[in-house]
Image (cartoon, rainbow, N blue to C red):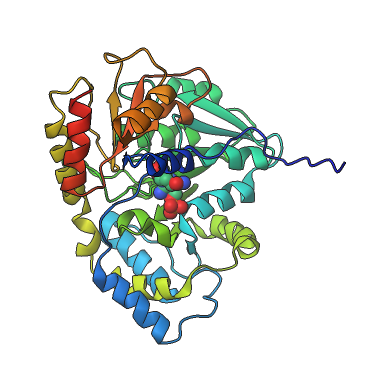
Length: 381
Ligand code: PMP
Ligand code: GLN
């Protein structure tokens, strides 16, 4: 018998696949996997069609269509008053997931340590482990999920290669403050630590807060990659297109791997996005758009038995069910899907084993009709 020895054995099928399939099987309202159930702008869809009809159907340049990189560069200038050179510091990727995997593969060697904060988005740790790295997890404590910077300081060693941050934060819906960023800047100053700043929800931030991108802090910017996702911003998660930026030396190293990882990504979509991105209105209204949805959803469930702190960013809301049942979050999420007709994500899957904060994550990137139906179910529990 042939012996198969895969490298990645510590993981099971992603919770997003499991819960979406369970929702479908039981015809449940799916607030689990994070995707909108409304349409992307027809103008953008027509622009992709136009690009395909005009023959943009062969390989795009390896780092991405130049016009798109220029539009991304202008977006940074407009929003954060900082610049990334379109020629050397921006690369278009197959979603943020590929950028994250490629960044980790570019730098993490066996024995290197990578600091992540738990609960953590699910694609970080497998990529670290596939590259022989060691994950150093620092817990974010419910219900505020704040970073304990003393714990970070204690966990930085000569082996620390990378620190991965994510703001606005999936799954908790919290955001990092200016103070947090200054702490990170002070702790990494004069080190060789690289920062991967996962900012896929940069345009979804509530209550007048501003997004604290690493690029606002010059000493953080010089050691950081930012990853971004057009799927999250333009309501088309299925297109799997995003980008990352970093100072030239970091980006050169990234592209050495990217060229053998995907070489280049979907061409007509890039052509369309290059034009679409020139109108800032296409992304500056997103916070207001999603804040209305958050407020609508929370108002509807304010008398339910779930407890919550309103999400500060992302399109996720965590709900505490500790007053409802003693069940584990995984068992309760399955029960809600199968018996009550509503699917969510149990937070423990983003945590180390044995941590169960008794909270579930619900995606509110849905039509009012869907949110209303969801609220009716939640209110009756
Ligand atoms: N990071 C976070 C925090 C996410 O929620 C997601 C899901 N959009 C990704 C990365 C991956 O983004 P993409 O779908 O563009 O690969
Ligand atoms: N980012 C999405 C979420 O957090 C899911 C992406 C995926 O299915 N891998 O729900």
